[in-house]
Image 1 (tube, each protein chain N blue to C red):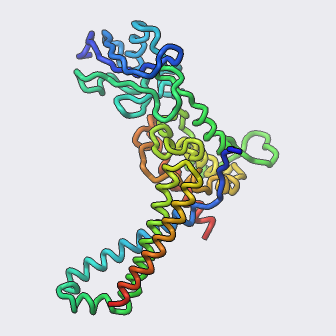
Image 2 (image 1 turned 90 degrees about the vertical axis):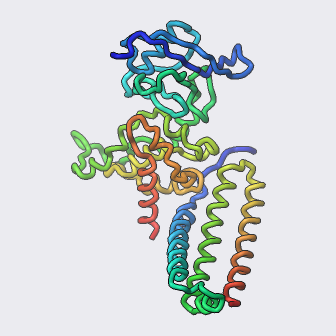
Image 3 (image 1 turned 45 degrees about the vertical axis):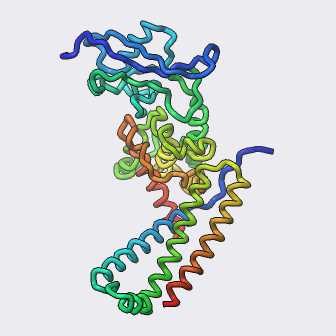
Length: 240
Length: 114
């Protein structure tokens, strides 16, 4: 590593509702060695320095989505963001995911996000008795689920979506709609029609104005806008 | 009672109409550019003759209807995005609709008078 043992400046959103009247940005710097390769590593060092800094993390390899946050103005996962990707000499600005209530520091209340996710019935609906081994699909049908099933529900996309900011209680949001299409596209599911009925609504689906912030931030490289387009396409095919 | 209700069961037709009217307006714009390059707007007389041609009248009518329909969906979207009060939204929806219908009639009257 070329940049071993360097000091990195952070600006971190701090808010402890039990102590602070309102949120504030804290300037803090930390000494990092060559083992701090990802932002989450650096945040671990920060936490060791000041254990009042609160954030979620679990798998530390982009599989759980716990450490989603707003990094220098763009949502992402701390564990997948390389320290090398930050411009040298400028503080790294960390804020909680926008548009959700803050519980403390970088921890947000995801209730609304999961409420929308649950509203699309994110499970296979098939009333036929299960076969002895498994419900089969052709390789082509299975192919359609690629780019959909990989979502880890980190909420980076949904909380970067202005339509979700304005109508979080009514708009399903990109993560929920991607999941909805994952089941609509699944040939083993028998409720595609009901799922389309459930989404055909000016708020639930049609608040999406193809802003594409969701595509820009998805740490898994998924494309909710494309999935939303396919839902609309299916609705058109069904209607005309 | 303040229970949240979602599920009006419409939206596809408006979304589709916005795409179709967008295409109509784009095609009309291209035709107008081509006509301008072809000299149809070189003088008032040439422009008047061009605009009073039956086919162009048909297209300009479609353009104005498309513009207003497109604007209806777009402006309604703005009210739905940013306003939380249903009463205020209803008021502005109606005002927008009435204004656009009025504008459409007025614009068609102007263009067809040529």
